[in-house]
Image 1 (cartoon, rainbow, N blue to C red):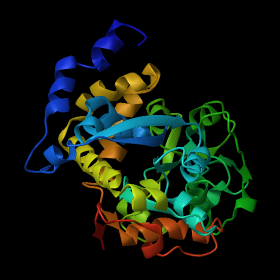
Image 2: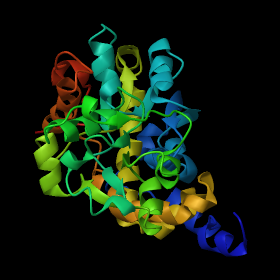
Image 3: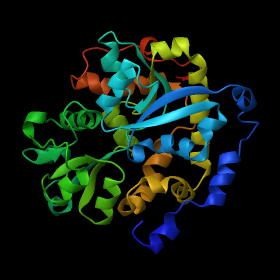
Image 4: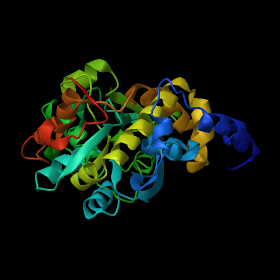
Length: 344
């Protein structure tokens, strides 16, 4: 933390963490005592940042231990490297976009979604504030410099979806692809005119009045228009057939942890959540992360790990429409829902 004020505002309160760590509602989690009869070692993959907050919470509050999982969380710098580690057997589960299941399955590699982590596209299309009078719709981005991460990634596919439904293509914009600069830096330094942004960059930029939101996917009408459904499973827990077939108990225990984590997130104030995991983030981003917890995460985090077939297909359709995948991977092939459960 930069100063005493930051420390007092965001420090991990021992008593809060201790209570949260030991609180286990036996009515909601009746299998806890059975699960503790033996410990299973697993390796979990995650990327750094707010999108992995549902991985940091159970690690910091001891939920993995309580479920009988000796969990080693390994941080990766990119989703593709994490997927490759999952395929190679270096990790057992990966917290990332289901895109990696679709791509792998179409190559004959048996990855699976085993638990849901998000229900909505939780990013915004933002535009530099000094262009407010000139850019009033997506079609006005023609000829502008834009960014949405690396070509072929989830955020890129979302951006292409926005363009195409407004009569444009990726050829109509000047695409800035940067693996070294954050969305915040690209917009703050005017290297781009517009970008796909999520927390915490989104909230820092909005607070500083650097950008305005042209499209917010959390708006139900926007989500329905561009993604064709009320829900889209944009993030999940992924695994491999060798894990689901040889270590099914580890999947069962992970799902129990996921359910407990989501219950905690929905009953706990964003301020209390940040006291638990705030130490994992840059102090300069804490206010923005708090805002993200109050908005996107509270709305996009599901109530439980159950997997919606409609949300699975809605997410996959984005990648089919943008040419990243060539055909749909059926739910029956890409999902292992024996423990998470299935929704319509």
